[in-house]
Image (cartoon, rainbow, N blue to C red; front, side, top):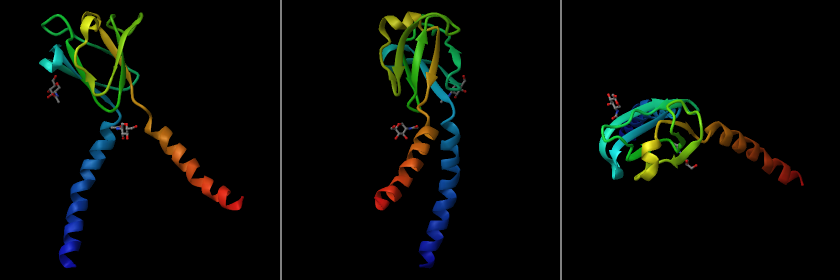
Length: 136
Ligand SMILES: *[C@@H]1O[C@H](CO)[C@@H](O)[C@H](O)[C@H]1NC(C)=O
Ligand SMILES: *[C@@H]1O[C@H](CO)[C@@H](O)[C@H](O)[C@H]1NC(C)=O
């Protein structure tokens, strides 16, 4: 018993900082840009807020060959560097292994992450429903 208590305490201490970091990380989008297809020739990463416009500097190869993104994000790609004009393409996490013709029109991105607060409120309203079911 004494061993188990000590073990659980140690486990809690280890878990706490990790989960705090995970929650904080969920707020931003991380994109990794590669000069070649299939994640060859790593060039740059960008961290920015969902909904913000992030300009992408062209890799030395002249095109963005592939890109990865975290946090379930979905990104719109624009040829302009300020997210103006038409959306030239979209990609979602975990990324796109070959941008093809989109690679030379990869001037900027704007990404969204599905909101976790939205699903939390859905859960709480669903939790009150069993009371109604019992009454009926
Ligand atoms: C992202 O890029 C910065 C510099 O631009 C670098 O210091 C950092 O290590 C990179 N992060 C990853 C995960 O590669
Ligand atoms: C990604 O989406 C899945 C399914 O909606 C969800 O279970 C998971 O927690 C999400 N991950 C992040 C990092 O938001």
